[in-house]
Length: 83
Image 1 (spheres, rainbow, N blue to C red):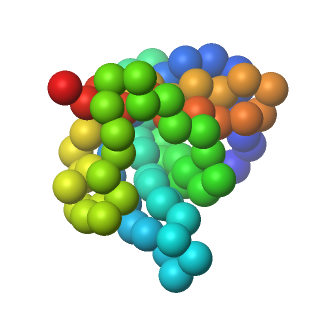
Image 2 (cartoon, one colour):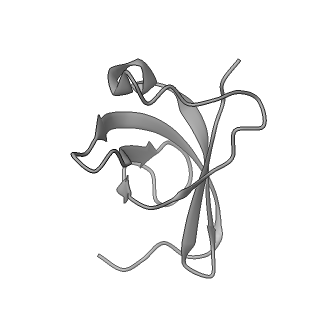
Image 3 (tube, rainbow, N blue to C red):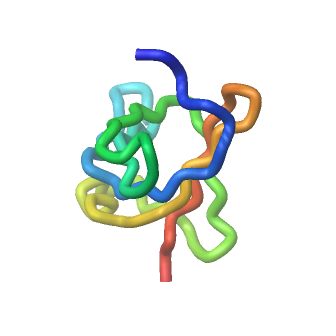
């Protein structure tokens, strides 16, 4: 599958896990636009948590959280919509 073009995408977290190395791993699905339904695996990604902190102690608590996925020069960043 070709990489996503540089843009901003509305997404929702559909899978979350913490690896043996302590790294947070997310899978998000795009919810709007021409790439709707595409699942993107996030590993070694930037997290923008201006509104809060992601709780990586319980990755299942992240399931269903909407957010924004930004692709800029192939670098992924994720901003969760945490209240």
